Amino acid sequence: MKIDKLARTMMLAMAGSLFAGLAASAQTPPPATLSAVPPQGARVWFYRDLDPYESLAEPYIRIDGAVIGASVPGAAFYRDLPPGRHRLSVDSYVDDKYQTIDVDAAPGRELYVRVVPNNNFVEGGGEHSGGYHRNSYVLWLYPPEVARAAIARSHIAAASPR
Image (tube, rainbow, N blue to C red; front, side, top):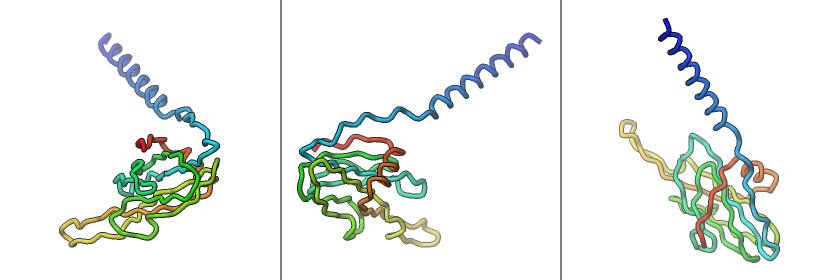
């Protein structure tokens, strides 16, 4: 009888600990402290939504031909740039005119670029063989009010050093 009561008490305590741990992990972390845009430079944000039906591949992001990071589903990162015209691109299996965009970076300005998977563009295979799928991506410039909301829901990742 005492063993049953002790076992029930321990199971309730373990269940309570489990629920407390789940509740603590579900809380939103405090917003990341980000530095201000340099007054003599510009900032470009790259972000990609997390969608369970899209590829988890991490294509390279380039500025003026140099790799500056990788696009990760559900993550965002930024890079500060000198003012002027810059070419932004994402690596893609398909050579698409929208995988590269040219932007004018003005001092103190922020630009927002969404990396969009172009699913089902290149795929095939037999009915019984499982087929194949090639990852392809494009870049879209987004207005700040739309992009900031998406970035707020994203994990802020570190870009690779330039």
